[in-house]
Length: 471
Image (cartoon, rainbow, N blue to C red; front, side):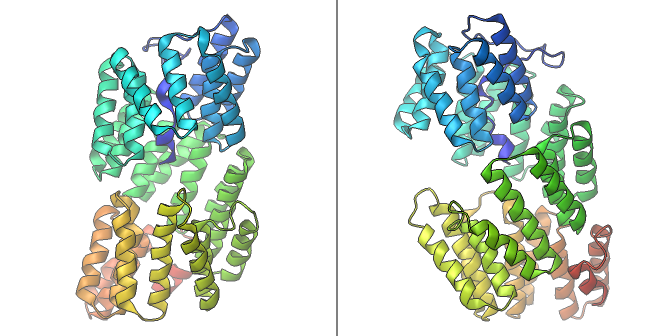
């Protein structure tokens, strides 16, 4: 989903054959070379190559240091790779250069400057003016779409993207973002249709394949997802998102060695603290899936030593899970206390509240307090608006209910997960055990077969696969 956050507001038809259908949008610069680098940067950004985009925009401002829109784009792309100091510096520079730009450019730059300063009232006012004065340009509709996306208003965002397509029928990123919005609404056929339209407009590019692969991944079509994602990184071996989503697909289907290789490739291609930390957490998670909880704890603890991450709610949830697996409930409760403390931070409140309920449910389940466990996992479920975002939560709810002996309710919960992701391995695992407990051996064998088919390429001695085989 992160890709939907790309600030496509300024992305124009770029100096390539693929995008020659779209009109150039006017920007103010005194240098033809700077303008060329600017458009090359937009091309790279369009394709989700953030660092290449930064290189081109840097060349643009080297040719024309007063190129306000190039500075703005540097600010936006530095933000997307989590280099927040550089991002702020370039947005500030763009804002200082607005005296000689067009009214439209000034409104756009001032909007992002207001966002930088957390001036939501000022940003909304500027957006209203931009929409009133330039209704037939893409910018106000894209800005509104991203605003609605942040607020979880997917239908409103979709309406804005439809307006963009009325203006620019082949605006590729509109199709990309529409695919993700439909995914978030659980409209999977629409999501796939828009990803395919995106691929049709941009043949031979990595990101359309990656988008389709991610949708297939979330709906449990793992073989097709892996096929798309492998093609994505084959086309562009330096495409970061492709490696990230391919790692997720491999891990979900038990190919943990392959997933680890993907994260190693991701680390080669990235470099900011946030990116490095994220990859290390994923590698620790692979050790968790392997059942090597001591190694997982060591890796998670190494990440937690950093000042920026010590109190991170998600990381402490992961550490809490490892501590529970190691039988150290006291340490897990310390992790829970750190998460609860993080609720006081307005920027982390939602994340902290979510992971507080998730870890509380795990602790209560271990203590066989099934009522409290169910209350907490239901609270977590209520916080997530996207169907695919709750698949694991529904599976956990089913696990709690199964352990409580409420097998009918457990079956309903696990079927809810499988209605979203038809081949979700954890859910199939739980359903297999439910049928076994109820003495429905034929159905248990059927589900066991489905599970083993999904996990057919899993690493040898994968712990969950071995347990099912021997069950």
